[in-house]
Length: 430
Image (cartoon, rainbow, N blue to C red; front, side, top):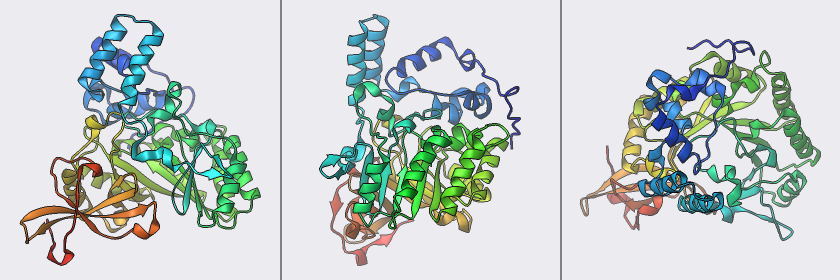
């Protein structure tokens, strides 16, 4: 474990770009005109091995590279950049590329509900029992992930953001929908907000006295990108944040901190480990999730090590996702068959408490689709994927196995064709 002395004297800003060749710096600058780029000195000082930056998982996670754009798109933007076209025309070229990257996968815009005929543009309600809330002040992050499926939240000139401040409208909506019992603060990253700002939202939720709401969740990457938010010895606001968590728990609400970890390297220092401990001491639980990412964590050993370390630190492995078909999807995507095999090898050698993970899962248009098995059909000698929805827009359609044609090259649900198969004839492969 790397020991970190976290105080203002030793917490320095390094000139991280000086480690990079000039051509690499130019590529980062160019690609970041298309894909949002943001980092901070915690990431650059403590998480990246600069002597091996090109293969470092956190570097790839945080710094865009030219392979994250299709070559023709890269050359198109590069030509406009080098020829110094007027900014308005350059932005038109950039936005055309952005719109080709499927900015709203799984038809997210259809998840926006209405309250008394008015769209709640900072809310998504896809599943029966949970609403997602996008507070306006939380629609940025401490640093940006290059794979992030919510990258349009950070591209203001496309006007594709989900966001709102009106928590009273959200509570009215929850009150009118008795099956909703969870609210997930998401973004962006809600932990970018000050404790005072979050408290205003939480106080309004408690003031509304919503009997049907029993769980509050925060979706966040802050434990990787800024664990100091939960370390009172470093941050004046950290104790306020931890006290807010205690307030939620003491108020009778279940608090779940949905942490995103993409690689064991993100957990291997004293700052993040102390932050995890402090959050757990408030009564909150920490659940972990991440997608499988080529070039970062497409290895069964990495996932096994990650789940083992998470359990050791008192966290609960929750979801192993399949990378969504948006942004630099082709750079990060891995074939479904390969992911399932990777999952099998990882989970079978994981300890009992690591087997809480639901995997592998795709967040598709109708819901979260889990690959349950690869099966052989003796009737035709072919392989098939056996799947089920663990979450669906229609709750009645969950946990009903179905079969899709096997394709060893397919990387997403929509690339497969559903088939009829007699389950009695199917034998689980592997």
